[in-house]
Image 1 (cartoon, rainbow, N blue to C red):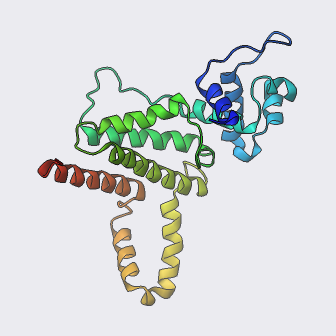
Image 2 (image 1 turned 90 degrees about the vertical axis):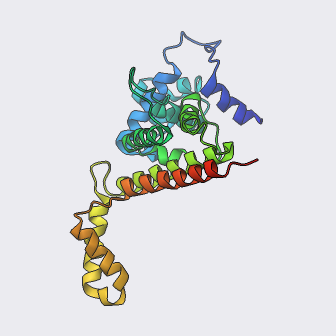
Image 3 (image 1 turned 180 degrees about the horizontal axis):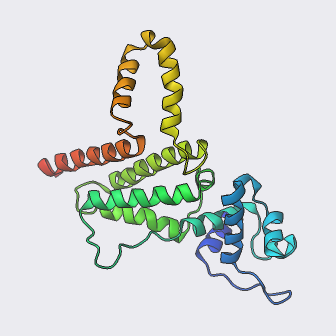
Amino acid sequence: MDGEHAEMVRLLWGPHPRPARGPRPTLDLPRIARAGIEIADAEGLADVSMQRVAERLGVTKMALYRYVPGKAQLVALMVEAAIGPCPAPAPGYPPGGWREQLESWARQLLALFLQHSWVLAATVGPRVQGPGELSWLERAVSALDGTGLTGAERMDAAVLLVGHVRGITQQAHASGGPAGNPEAQLGSILGDLIQSHGESYPALTAAFASAVESDGQDQAWEFGLQRILDGLTALIDRRAASPRP
């Protein structure tokens, strides 16, 4: 592990010794992360900088550097704080089977990404993940224990669900945030095009007419989530019928 990754692991996983020199510490990593999150939630990740966070905390940028070496580490701390540990089921709440657990997990993750849509841009590519973020993956993978799927397949199932959550969040964010309705906006645009050029796209025209008649019930989020779970059900049933040697 190189020095940069080692430093990221230390920041995310600890220990966090107090600065050895200088005045008495007035900051801590959770407070710094919260300040960055407030800026990102309000203005976007691009507007987060060491200078902006320092100003929000009422300290100098040099004082902030005593705790966080740079923006990459700052963003990593923000992601970990924003995502946090995967919520445990409420006391007395029946956990249900693997499908119910994964469905609940996906809905919780969607709510989190809609609240902090900047996390999408901050969680792309290979990077060090914190304990809270890993707890989400742990919960999804463990929900599939005993299903007959391999460890790799359980990991892939979690990644597939995360991809669906990310896609829906990106669409919502592009449509003006959680309150936006990307499907309604797309439907309006598509309707205008079909009205003018529908004869060239008969299958799409028929499908669009069906969607209009169903009053938009086949929404992308719900449809995609249930089809992913249906696919996992089919795979699990097939494994149960012909288990591997």
